Image 1 (spheres, rainbow, N blue to C red):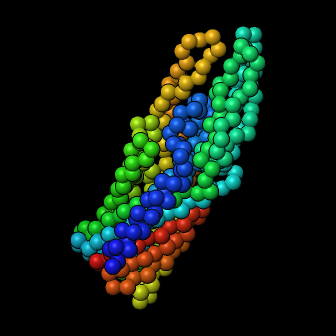
Image 2: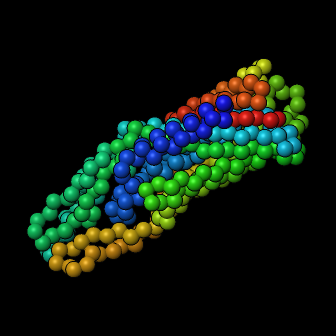
Image 3: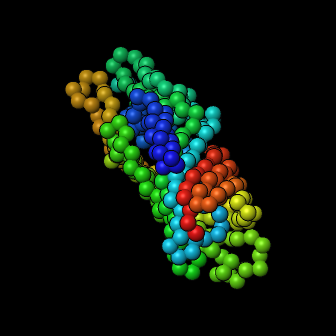
Length: 308
């Protein structure tokens, strides 16, 4: 019964994630941005991804014994702030005699949908010629299967992986991390709480044009009271997203479009994080939830089967 419920939940969550993007492929939107406007347009995507992948890395500071494990699913919801849904795009209007620079408030990748064509006199052209609009999303859901396995000397291995086919593109998320219990390592056995440190590296790829990575490090504390385990943590993370595509635009009178290679690396705005959470364990069944205070405050939850 439990397995069937989890399977139905996974199907529902996958459908919700896919439908969140509607009929619009974010890769197609990004390709309509020239390099000068790209950073501001995709910054919310990079920051929200880093926020999501830095979530759910732990739910207790105690570590598994040798070959003890958790097998479960992490679910993240990252609301997008209103001020991250628009930016000032720089437009070049070019004619035979003049180059004029103007600015226009337009949607980021999470802003309102709908294209905005730049008007120019006959014989002139604009770069970019069209502002593509966004996905019109209030937030982004993420979900990731996760495995934690106890190793020797109070260490614990974490592995995440999920491939998602989406609109003709292969989306892949993979992560691995190592957690170390500090009570035994630093001879802190008399402390009334458990303390652990953790590092993780995760990658997120969309097709051939977007490759991203997040490096995370944290220290967290927990205390178990019967079936309840409150936990808190402090962490630092750095997200970098690489873009590699061709930006195209049309010059009047030219038979072929002009192609400009775009190859750029952009850092997310996510850095420091505070986590406040609570876990509940009944037998081998575990559920937990936490609130993450970071650039984009977010929520994380998880369910798992736990054998310690």
